[in-house]
Amino acid sequence: MNHHIETDVGYFDSAACDLDAFTAIIDQTATPSTVPNADDIQKNVPIYDMSKLRPLLEEKEQRRTIMAEWARVLQAGAGVLVLRGAYADTTAIDDATAIFEQIIATEKLASGGGGDHFAASGSNDRIWNSLQKLCEEAPDVFLRYFANTSIAAACEAWLGPNYQMTAQINLVHPGGAAQQAHRDYHLGFQTADISAQYPAHVHDLSPALTLQGAVAHCDMPIESGPTKLLPFSQLYRAGYAAWRRDDFRALFEERCIQLPLAKGDALFFNPALFHAAGANSSSDIHRMANLLQVSSAFGRAMETVDREKMCKLLYPHALAAHQNSTLGASDLKAAIAASAEGYSFPTNLDRDPPKGGLAPETQQALFARALAEGLDLQEFGAILNEMRVKQLA
Image 1 (cartoon, rainbow, N blue to C red):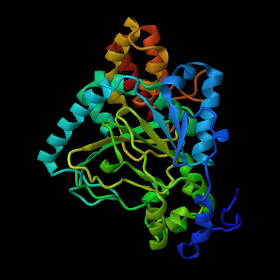
Image 2 (image 1 turned 135 degrees about the vertical axis):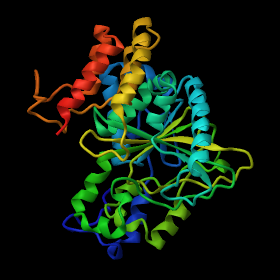
Image 3 (image 1 turned 60 degrees about the vertical axis):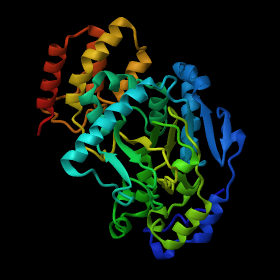
């Protein structure tokens, strides 16, 4: 089914966006035959039971089959999927929640709290760069939290290997207002005027550079305001030009869906999907989600993250987990992927030439090698320092 705008258009203009074409796209229905690994389909969104699929992620071919299915859903299907029970054990989530609550309290005292891109201030609390802050406050908790093969597979399914993890906590209190419908980073974070200056093919490519995820830190019934989603809306090519229009936003409000989530569930969606945080109409649920903003190795991440510092903080805990076998190899790989830089570039090729291949060693490769060789923290830190100096301009 292809209701896309004609492919020969060079630039998208909000005035030319066609609500009827958009409506035809979102009128599609997800069918079970297209998502054979899904446990259920709810409101067009495939639901994957990770208690069943998690063991299959350890088998290369089955992992690829599952990831290919997830990529099809994100690109050509509903544009959103739910991983039920992405965390088999929610202890790491509870431990992280306690730390995030401490960080929120500390930051509120210091600055009065952070803003939000698409919501009124005061209705929620936001922790920018919750990734690094969790690692700094409790690297042992960070390790257990991101040693998650379900999350790692979802990220790799859309972005390929060497993705860049960033994350922000969003805590919406009872009475917190809904966001307005929007698309996300990159082009969704540009003004309408600037977005319109990018040619149409860049609008097509932008969603492939990032993946949106959310980890539920508490049970989220509908009244708590889980994310409002419009399945299939990522397929409208001119969506970055259209999402601010009143008629498109009105249709979003009329047709959007919400799915209840349980603590430990994860939701992933194409950043071009029309979406918005819901209104928290509950009396007592403080809805906390860790919003995963994952970037392709080939793109620019939204936040600056001190990955070298994170590696040094994390390494002793990862080494102990490796040596004591408290975490499996794929769990450790997932945690390293969420913290260390996975791409070799940009670098200074005079000082940092490719060795044994086309590219210099990455932080991730070094981290894995250090664990395998049993390097101590001092040795690992010294190589990281040397790596940074080599990469400087």
